[in-house]
Length: 610
Ligand code: M6R
Image 1 (spheres, rainbow, N blue to C red):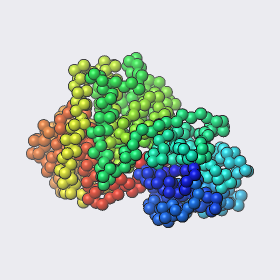
Image 2 (image 1 turned 90 degrees about the horizontal axis):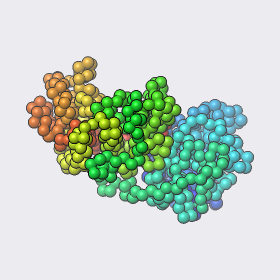
Image 3 (image 1 turned 45 degrees about the horizontal axis):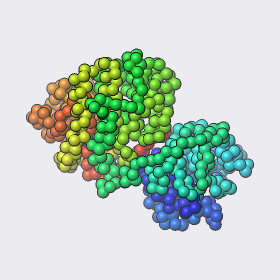
Image 4 (image 1 turned 30 degrees about the vertical axis):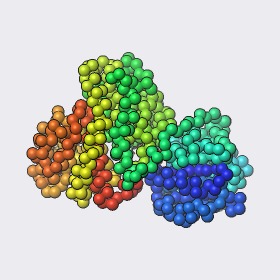
């Protein structure tokens, strides 16, 4: 998704903005631009389709642009193709306003027509140019007044950075449903889509809330609400190191983040287990409330949804409560059955996914209590949920999620145990067995990661396959969905995940000699059934890689071409181990194919448009 950086201070702004934009590259983009205001040169705008390097080359690393106030932007095209002219900043015809934008202005067409009827000429196809032109049209010498009037005329989701050539000592930042933070330093202030863009310069940040507007000058910020009433905001200190957002010697962020999973799991789980008990100090659920639950609705997108698919099996088993897993993008439009006794469990790495955010709001509106599992501290979902449990995965930069998935999964285990104990639906013996296994997961993850060369070998055998199937039953099926998504998003190989027993109801017609099937066979309870399905595809000529536990590996080896064996663990925790070979397989396949692993085509890290 688009990335915004703004700087106002006493130094040259352009190099700082380019550095900030480089930290936002992971979000996904197809063009980039800068607007700098300088006393000598006035408003200077440079923008270009393509990678940030193009913009950097055009401006000699920012050296050709002079001025200590400016905005930078990486654009992920929505309205209008990726092109120089559609890149941001968008500038009004009179050259007074430059605007960068993340989000979508839904009623831009009617405003554009209105402004065209006033004689204003548009040069781009973007909804953002409408905002720059509208601001200039409404401007009568008072910047804030023009911004407030503009906001009353537009509908949609947005974060804006605005610079006005008539008021060159300040930036204006506005947000509604798209993230925007402010960074505070000595003699300078910044604004950005996320903390990674400012952390090199400052660790003191403020999270803007919806419908807030900030006036940003070198010496400070003043935040206002939608009625231009001043708002007191709390500043937060960011305590992770900048190295957490760097590659640290790895070729790709994805590789680094896969390898960080044991540590991320430890950080997420270990402080929350004390004396053999799950201690979720941030949660305040009552036994009565849990017993009266009519349903747990898990709401998420993509990989977070896949975590929800696993959690459904575990929650239903341990809590004996119905669990429904909804794709957030479908939830709002499906007339969901939600009552005051429904718990909405919302899962999101970024905490900004617009589908998940709006679904959570809808669930709350219908009466649900929202419990969120989020990685990004201070994100919108974290702040709007009734309760939040953070995954302590640290910043995840690669578009394809790995350590966030693993830590989200870990938190679902903790919730399941915590609720089950409170409700009395788990025996003390089983509770203790799961807790002690939970503490062994990081070491078992390390064992799997130490054998990554085997998976690299399998990737070298199959990286040219046009289509790859993942089959499994029960939670193996849910993990297969994640393995399949990982593979397709970074390697661009077509792939499907199938419930193994469902194959013969249609999809098996696609199996032919040489088709690769990755069979997840780690659930002992359904192992024999799964192996029957493996035999079905084998007898139609498929090559099969089985993913199973050490104790079952001897069995799979009799039937399949290759076996990947993971350590054994409690059945409920298997997904944490199963997923890692699948992440590695996707990674190595993509590497062999020469793909842009950290920034796959067409994808964005944080999806802030519906
Ligand atoms: O930030 P979120 O967890 O809400 O993001 C949801 C999905 O967009 C995300 O999991 C996506 O599917 C990943 N890129 C998959 O690797």
